[in-house]
Length: 127
Image (cartoon, rainbow, N blue to C red; front, side, top):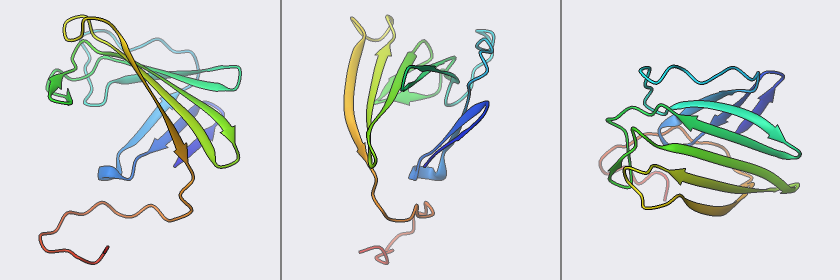
């Protein structure tokens, strides 16, 4: 789910019901000593593309088994059709990676509801 208000964009992930509120008002990132589990995101529009830059990840947070405390993540969301958004993310962390790297994925409208995230042993109700 992506919801836009005049001063923020809200991104809701189905996994663990994680919600990110991305300010669009031009405020600076938090000071380097202030760390958040999912980082400190700031957004802006570049034409028809929403650009989200996230820094200040908690040093306990990991991405694919690697710590991300020094990560600078830049995400680009571009609507390319009524049911499609092209999603691009670039990860830059010189302490972890030899150079920045980028992933591009299509996001398509599923047409179904967002389910509550729950993990129960033996739960076959979603089959």
